[in-house]
Image (cartoon, rainbow, N blue to C red; front, side):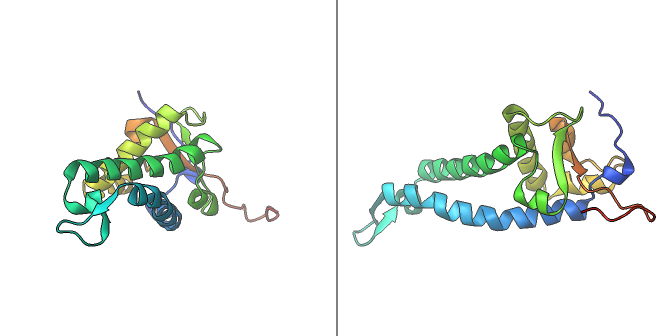
Length: 167
């Protein structure tokens, strides 16, 4: 499936993408902190050799740790999935004038949002190369854009010299 060409004025560059991510990251850190409280409280057990209570995943149980990370990844997906399927903008994207949509301009479904989220993790996991490839593509798309059939577009068009400023 090939994607339709996007007007150059609407393309989102790497710097703007990263600014959105940094803004959202501040919110996600707070979200992860709050989301970590229930499992830490519910699954605490005495530390090896007695003493203080510690969450089970701190005691070297790889399944607990994997379950905890999967839980946190699900919480973060819930954050992005909600915003992407309800208006196409996370708070960072709204701040920096960016919206995510499918290639045909339709809003994301939960399935498409999950696909984008998983491929975005892959884009980061390969040393950020999935993001950096947007610098070398004429359409400015990153790996997760291509694999999920989505694209980022600017929501604020550049002002024309003779046009009045937007309110």
